[in-house]
Structure formats: C-alpha cells, structure tokens
Image (tube, rainbow, N blue to C red):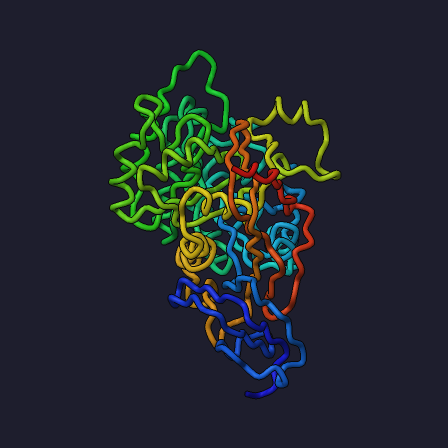
Length: 425
C-alpha cells in the first residue's frame, strides 16, 4: 500500500449504505479514504490510531440543527460545537436562513465552519427568529414564494429543502395556508418539504382548534420525499391522536406515498410517545438532534431560566445531543445498524447528497465518525420528567472532516447518567 496520512486500525466498521459491518482498518491520505480492509500495514501510515472496540461509521449527519448563531437569537448555536466537536461532520440547519438572510448564513456560518453546513431554507421571510415570541411574523402574508424559490435555486449548493410548521397555534390564525405556500415553494424548487409537528405558538385568543383535525388536513398535502418531523412530540398535534391515543391512520397513507419521518429530538422527545409510535410500527428514517439555545445549558447561554420557561414552551431540562438521541432509539428497540442508518445513509439520500456523504467508500472525502459504545446502566430522561433505563450509551470519540481530526470536546455533549448497579438476587 502507498504511504497514507492516517490509519484507523481495528474498529467495527458499520456502513449501512454498502451493507458493511465488520472489523476493518480505514486508511486516509490527502483528506480521502484510500483503503478499507482488515490488516492494512501500519508501517505505511504516518499516524496510526487504535480504534479497536470502537465503532467507525460514515461522518454523522444531523438533520435538524439550529446554527445561525446570533441572527436567530438564542436559538442559534455555534456550528462546530454542534458539529465536528460533537463527532458530527454535517449539519442541516432547519429554517434558520430565509430568502432575505441566506447570504449572511453563507458568509458567517457556512464558510468559517469546519463542519459541513447546509440548510432547509425557511418558508418565512424572517427565517428562524425566536418564533415563539413573534407568531404574527409566520403567517401567509410573510411568505414570498417567488423570492424563496429563486434563493433556493441561486444557493443550490446549500439549500436542500424547505422548512415550514404545521401546528395548532398557526392553524388557529391562518389554517394551513402557509403549508400550501410552502408546498408550492418546494414543488417549484424541486426540493423536499420538512414539516414541524407539535404546538409551537399559542392558540389565537377566543379560537378553539382541533389538533387532530390539523394533522388530518395536513397529511394529504405531502408527497414523496417530504418529511414529517417530531413523531415523538409531547405537544399537541403530533403522530399520536388525542382522540384515540394511537397513531393517526393517515400517517400510514403518507408513509406509503414516500413521506419519511425525522425524529427531530429536541424538547419534543417524549419517552411515552416514542414507545407508542415505535410499538405501532413507525420506524424513523432520519434523526436530528434539534439542539438550540433554549434546550442546552451553557454558561454563556443560561440567562434567566424562569424567564426562558415562561417565554418558550421548548425550554429544555434533559441534556441530550445526537449520540444521546441514538442511545434512546437503541433502548427503544431499534438495532444499532438501523440507528446508524438514520444519521448516515438515509439523511444523505434525503439531502440528495448520497453520492458524496453518508458512506465510507474508497475515493470519497474522509468524513468519518468514531463512536464509543459504553456498557452499563444509564438513565434516559425527557423534558416531561419521564425516565427509562438503557444498557448501553453511545458517545462520540472523534470525527474526521475531510481527513482532519476533531476530538469530541464540545460542552454540548452530555455526561453519562449512570444508574447504581442492580442488587444481586
């Protein structure tokens, strides 16, 4: 073998895109993968990293990030804290930039970040402002279809979809008119539509709204490639009907048409709703962490917790990140390979980027995530106070982004919450 810059030696290589699950070495030279095989010669490598006992997967893709820092208020986090410093190589900002603000997103987020950053552009002119504070800025009068389509076309390297919200606060004001405009934008730009489910805004004064009816009216509007987010939401208007306590029957019809499911963890994750939905047979296609400044606690973001709680229904108390969300899916019964697919091969397809990311293949850019699978007894929590136990926890070790190593040093990675050992029988 020709000399290489880096050899990852002896890890469990899992790549759902190619059906790979075996112990192998991965060699990197010039920022690209040059070999994947067992027993590659270590003497050909300038540096060898022993990853035995670790899992080596394609660079993780977080399908629901909020990284338009400063422009989107407290929502916007530092891209590299969410990305490479958390073991994640690609971030999809969900609705931060709009047709008005995408030049700044490119200049001040995409270009300086070590992480790869793309987006689903906002349907709304204002983009991802702290919308829970300004619901009137998110109505149909605040949408310009032609301008947004043009912005998507002009920024095709960054814009991979359209973001909109189908929730009861907006529906109490405008029905689903915004969703119809968003679907027109998606259709005219040839991109998928990503739909937030679960209440975001307060219901308009003196209006009564049926959350189940909002979902029933929404689903026929969606087609192949569109994405339903927050299937495990604890807020009204999600996958689970308030009338029956079961998954809406129309969800199945939408999935049959090619609509996919993105977990969009965030403050929406409910252990109870996740159990019900997964037991009903819903399998998440992609997994986004949905971290933002209200649901992570950093010293420079903490502010006044009481004020945050009052202003934002999505204030978070249960620490999480992408690998923590992966841990929860495994604990809920998904296989490790299935969960790895939700952060690699499947999101690459969703983004129309499966030819460049989401798989470990010779000749491709060396975007690689290395994970620790830590055995033990760990507590899983959600923001409604529910808890469950897991027998293993997935933690990020480091990532390679175009061959450059980044250790998982982000303060956003939550510490393990170990439970005491079970008493001997």
